[in-house]
Image 1: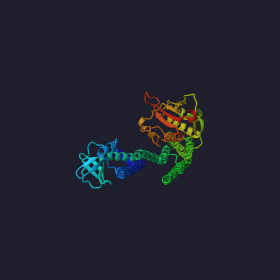
Image 2: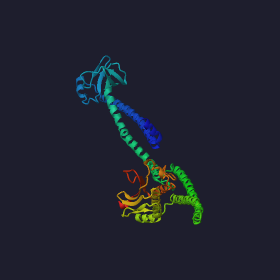
Image 3: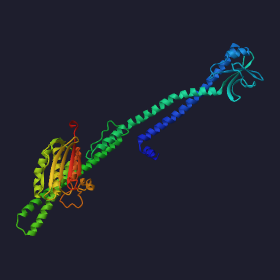
Image 4: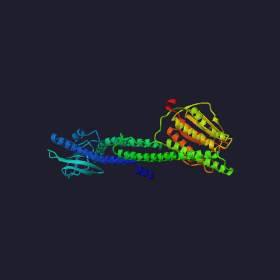
Amino acid sequence: MDGFKKRLKDSLQLHLSFWLSFAILGTALVAGAFAFFSAFQEAHELQDDVLRQVAALFNQQQLNIAKEQAADKLADSDGDSRVFVQLLSRDSATSLSGTTKALALPGTLHEGLQTVSAGDESFRVLVKTLRSGQRAAFAQQTEVRDEIARDSALRTLMPFLILVPILLLMVANLVRKMFKPIATLSAEIDLRSEQELHPLETERLPSEVRPFVVAINRLLDRVSQSMDAQRRFVSDAAHELRSPLTALSLQAERLANAEMPDNARERLGALRQGIERGRTLLEQLLALARVQSAGVGSTTMVSVQQVYRRVLEDLIPLAEAKNINIGVASKADAQVQANEIDLITMVKNLVDNAIRYTPGNGRVDLSVHVGGNGVILQVDDSGPGIPPEERNRVFDPFYRVLGNRDVGSGLGLSIVRTIANRAGAEVKLMHSDERTRSGLRVRVLFPARADQQ
């Protein structure tokens, strides 16, 4: 019961349906009770009219006949509608309705309609003085009268019993249809990614909901402007820092050609490594700012093997410097619907991470798999891997696995996740060797398009 009360309090649709149903049922009960008692009273009045009509018939026809003849002529075969007719005297009553025994009616009854108890039964009695001067009593059993009146009144309730449930179902259906645009709007917002900040459609919404949606659109616009400002700041800052770092790198190269002591050359090497890390960080900041921009860009069918070749051309020198065996493990090719530059950026970050975190003399393999679910881009390495409890955190910008001393900015997987979300792909991390629970395998699943299924 507490759960229902909570749902009733929290759900506007359930709240409205409940109170509308309550109002309909309450109105139906009041109307049904009024109709029942009105029909019940009207049936009694009709039965009183029957007594008056019988009395008028006796009076008009001047029925003043012998008792034994009357008993044969006035007997009624229908017990439910039987009218008892008796001649009243001061001391007794004589039956004219075919009964073998007269009703125990006192002879002192006053003229008109009245309810009289005779023995263990109750009767509705009309007493009338006929033209012949005789006083006659015309009676019906109240039990029979009440049963007939009840049946007649219950028949008046049949429309309520049939129509009220239908009306409740119609109300529930109408309320659900009225709230359907809100449910549709909620589903549309829920399916959006964090980059989809375009305004919501307001044309087909009810006028009561439209101001709320307009306010949401204004909020989305403010959030979009704020995010654009942040991206521009990151991009501008990275661009501004690129030139000084490039100049420092050139000066360090020139300085390396000069004669200097060994300890100075060692410090110069550390300086050049720091400059290189800064340049790498700036490049990834620029890449992250670009992929997080509002514009998705045009998409085409891109060959995965061609992307692999372009990435390997750029990163093979980095792999050779660590003596890492790198290559494409599968000859099969596949095409995915994506922005080519975004796809190259994503694969390049995956391979770059694999090379950086794989120890010397290790291995990095690229492969592509085509199945019923779609196309899978896979990168395996022989590095330390990522523990299961860290796999959700590594997609956060600048987050690095604890205890990892390898050089990196913590932006690579964040860029990969952003590009995958824009392309409708799914990124999954696991061990490349489940037996030894070592190495990292990154799978990017591009779901099959409708025309490919």
